[in-house]
Image (cartoon, rainbow, N blue to C red; front, top):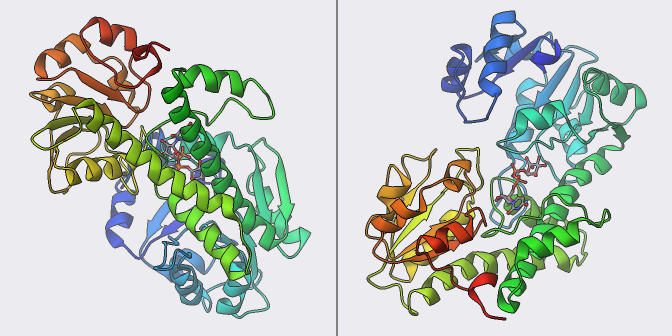
Length: 408
Ligand code: UGA
């Protein structure tokens, strides 16, 4: 928002983050964001403070970007959103617009209005559609901007903040905006679960899943994006948001079985990778060392929350395997039975199998001969389909249960 020319004051209850931002340091890895941060700090468009009154008292718009973690029953925990609303309610100037960026269940805008309890304050919902690792690109080139508000004037005032961003801008009711966010993430998760189920079928039937996805994606009704098979989907959004949508449906007494099927399919996807490794190693992982490439839930982030890689590793370790993992962005992760290496070759040293769980670009060009020479076995399970299988096979690798390894 600061790079669009707005004067932004960031507030956080965590003063460490405030101090980091002031010093031009990011608490997360996000490609391209450091350049923007330093530019807007220098231009003076971005300040950071630990003083809530300083941040909100003079603001025309207050964006609430606090977490909505998963509660014990799978529903979204709104307590941070409500606490933030209550903390600022007496500080806001008349006419201010409180904009919810946090992913919140349908009906939350009304709860925020109640928590603020002032007729002279407006509440709008402006869901966030950024992908980690591509957040800057997605902010600058969004497919759409959605604003839910009670009046057109309030919605328009929020949309005007994005006047320099060229994309469709959609005005909706508050509940519609809240549901668009959950429905979008859940639809994408369902799409990926289907992709992973079909990929498993491809492997069983001797077809290359990439050829199948390419052929499907050319149908414009299906679309060629978000069709990459993998070890399952993860991260801080899809797992939490799919469970929250199921819980929202429950609260309305509705059955929406597809979402639960997608969640169950995703568990199966994690298990399938572990099964493939175990079968390739003769049916047991006891006494076996497995090299893993990638711990983050996808490439270009340092985020390991709900990472499918971790879920697969837990299964490998749970079945008696020893795991040595390498990830370019992870230098510390405590998991019994797993140790970290500082390169792909050192992770591979003495391993019986090599498993790719995150699609980091640097893994694509690893020297197959060097890695295989360091290993004591030759099994390669590429759950992200990033290796050139022919090159690896020429270097001696065996790819269990893939199209070219079968004689169908
Ligand atoms: C997701 C949505 O894509 C964003 O639109 C949304 O704003 C965000 O959640 C959020 O709610 O904040 P994100 O969790 O950052 O973004 O990551 P994605 O790129 O969607 O990937 C999610 C998972 O699906 C990852 O584990 C990724 O590896 C996997 N994936 C994605 C695949 O396995 N195949 C694909 O083709 C795409």
